[in-house]
Image (tube, rainbow, N blue to C red; front, side, top):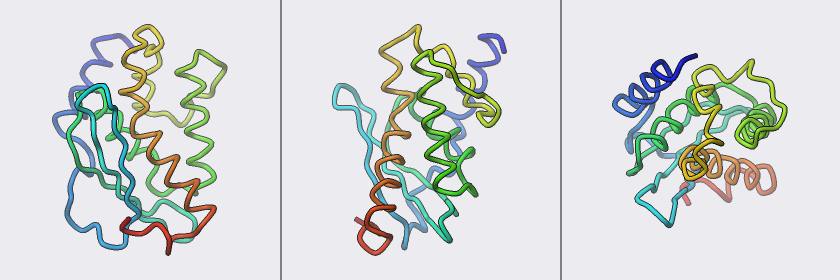
Length: 150
């Protein structure tokens, strides 16, 4: 994929982000993810049913890269088992760290494969992943009752 195609995917997911809303979030697990050195501050709302991601929504203010990354991440995670999502995140982190990875399930997330060339953008790209990983690991440890609407 060339840089123009990547730019187009990022811009489309920034201007028309998937599942960006603060409505209808009752019963969702909420986790905040922010970058203290810039404007990026997003709330992720995660609905888990039968150990699967049934839905994810988000709200907040963030740069084009963080917003696009969140939108693309959500599209790739809805419907997956928690274990598969955590493996996806591990694989995604490997890509960003220039380690060996499988791109088979990245879909549009492959647009971030050269983020290592702009180290300052790594935080933007990983912002939603840090949040959801934290929420899912806590969910596995404590269960949904302790995390819903926190």
